[in-house]
Each structure stands twice: as C-alpha cells, then as structure tokens.
Length: 346
Image (cartoon, rainbow, N blue to C red; front, side, top):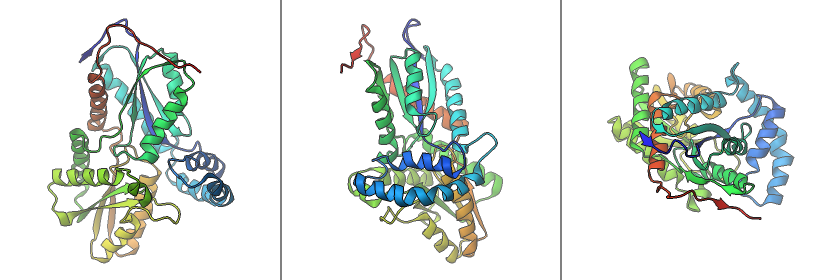
C-alpha cells in the first residue's frame, strides 16, 4: 500500500479509450466519424485533399453502413464499448481504494465522442487534483490511438493556468500480468467450449506507411502474440497473427484477417479460435467484425466454427494489472519537499 499525507491534494486518474457514437444512427455516426477521421493522427493526408474526400465521399456513404453494424451489437444500456469502459473504470477505482492510502478521483475520457477527454480532465481539475495519471487502454502503442489520446490531453491542458504533475502510460504490450490475463482468458474459453485447431491473434491494422515512419505498433502486436502463445505452450503451427479493419485503398500491414480466415478454412481447418489482444474492451471491431462477419466468412469457405474469445473487459486479472500499472507509475515519482506548481502564462 502506498502512503501519502492525508492533507495532500487528491490524485487524479484519467482512463481513456477510443470512443463511440451516441446512437446507432447515420446522423450520430456522421458526427462521430467526422471527428474521428479528421484527426491527423488517424489520416495524415494533406488537409484540402482529405477534406474533399471526407465530406464528398466518406461521410456520404460510411455513416449508414456503420450505423447498420452498430445496431447489431447495441444494447439497452447503450454502446458495448462505453458500458464496459465505465465498468472497467469503476472496478479500477474500487481496487485502487485498497491500494492507495491517499485521496484520489478516477474518471473516464473518450478520444472521440462523449464523455470526452477534455471533460474528464475538467472534472479532475474541479476536484483540485494536482497530479494526474493518464491511462489509455491501448496495450500496444500506436500514434493513431495512444499518441492521439495524449494530443487531446495536452490540448485541454493548454487552457489551464496551473498545470498538474502528469504521468502518462504509453503501453503495456509485454507486461507479465497482461500476458497472464490473456492466457487465462484463452484457457477459460477452452475449458468451457473446447479448443480450436488454430488460434488467430487479430489486431487492428494501420497503414503500412505508418510503420515505415517508425511506429512500433506492429512489432509490439507480434511480441504480445508470441508471449501469449509461449505461455499457452503452442507450437508455431498452432497460432498466427493477422490485422483487421483496414480502411481505404492504401496498403495496410499484412496479413489481413479477412484473407487469412478463408485460407485457413480452405486448408481444412474446421474450428478456429480468434482473440483480439489489442482491444481492452469489446466493441464493434470484436463483436460485429470478428464475431459476426468473420464467423460467416469462415463458414462460407468450409469451416465449421469460428469462436471469438472475448476481450479482457472487466476480468479480475485485467483490473489488477491496470491497477499495478498505475501504482508502478506513481512509485517512480520522486517526493517533493514542498509543493511546486508550474504556471502556464499566455
């Protein structure tokens, strides 16, 4: 347990994820996609050209298609990603209360949509938090996700006169307890439903060009998969890595999940297990793309059963690991002999 002065200003914890539309409707999706796809971290094409493509083509066609996909997974409580992110944040708060001997506030902020990162930070400011830990729920670092979340944090902090001490967690792709949690989730699934002939690690793709520019994402994805496969004692023929959810005509990192899956079925694989370790919470890309689209694709090419192994969500091992990330980050902080403030002057 970490100790601190009872009179110290409270610690703030901001948990971040990508975001979600407010409703599974074309209007809501248009608003959400407009914000998401205008982010330079996501699409870095020259702005005049991309503005024409985005408003002239993408936002005229994609919202209706995306709304139809979201409507398949939408629940009475709302978007699965938002519902689960709230549960994760609440569970993390409960666990930290047993580990942190100091006042703290924890809140959720989404990069796109609501509740926004800006509003999450404003809440922590209202609680007079002078130290803030930012935890993006992206195990593997990617500029389009992790760095974009930090962009939103820094953009909001530009408006603050007194800046907090800021702690940022950039990745945890090889954290031992993250690997253990993934391993346990696979073993639990196998124990309940039986084991497939192959295990496919399907990660969200990014343009190949981004990796060539130095993004470490692909290597971190492959390392996560390798560590989990080793923990599961799989040989090289029993597992593989692929990348999903590509968008546009540009080449993305390969192999593509929607090409690998038919190939496996054609090679005679009848039962395929798929997990998506890059997603901390189940969402459109896992529930609809993998669980529905890829399931039907596998069957169409002769497979018998594609089983999606759920994301870690609010599993106990996952929440424990996230709490340790925060505690480790705080343990690296050097104690101050007196209160120090950084003032932002315009």
